Length: 159
Image 1 (cartoon, rainbow, N blue to C red):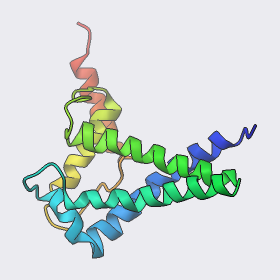
Image 2: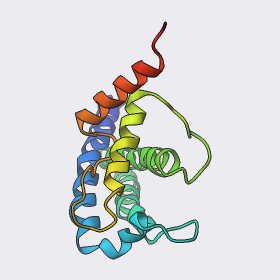
Image 3: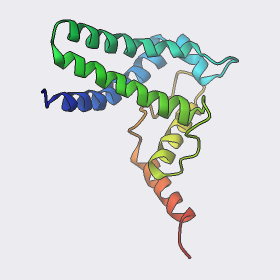
Image 4: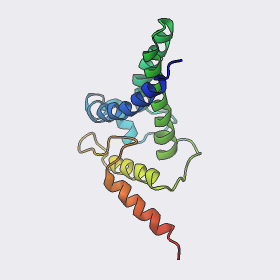
């Protein structure tokens, strides 16, 4: 049994946050802004042109898993599963929780989740591709976490 597989998966998941941050800042808010723009300036419909970006991660994930299995090279398989796990987390946090594209996981009022929503709100206050901030998904500036923690304590303070 390959005991290191889950370590590779978790490592890939963590690295994906930094990859996604860079992709968001330099590609989505850069030369591929025309695909990302409808995410900042909502248009009618269930899907957005922005949804095309899932392919940028889904294709390498699928290729790592498929080619790794075909060649009995299991490091790429675990990398592919790490990318897929990040994609699933992205879907749950970003599309379901933050943007409420589906109606479950709506009101989780814990400091970590509140900080993520706040940072994303700050990111979306800029309608254009310039002057953006808070490009990550799971790692947010500490000030938002501290603010959320204070707010949470105030709401749940025992009297």
